Length: 126
Image 1 (cartoon, one colour):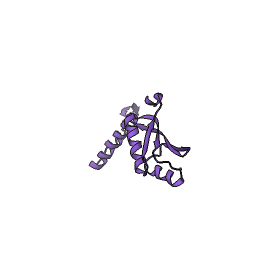
Image 2 (cartoon, rainbow, N blue to C red; image 1 turned 180 degrees about the vertical axis):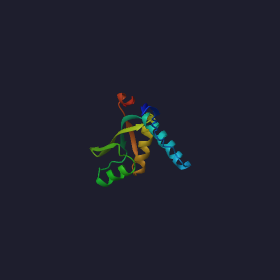
Image 3 (cartoon, helix red, strand yellow; image 1 turned 60 degrees about the vertical axis):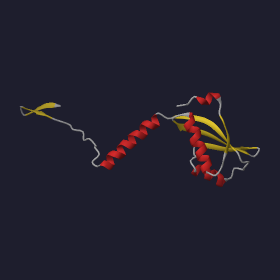
């Protein structure tokens, strides 16, 4: 921006400070945050159901164990004594979504009997 004051020309410069990492640790954190943002932007959401192999009743402690094991994106339910977990999981691929869900269920102490998925659910939703 330029202007004149009492016959003299002046230039007003606006400088925006740049926030730069000052240490290696700050740089590493900045890179990790950037990578995480880019990775999350490329994630898709997949819908599928895991059927638990043991006939079990859904209790509050079992629901807590599933949540603590990483199944916070699943909706548990029972029908005729069969426990199912409906997942809505974000992942880079359907295979990743299912394999991480199975790992999380096993971490809670349960085993998976089978995976149920609709043909329409094979395509990710954004």
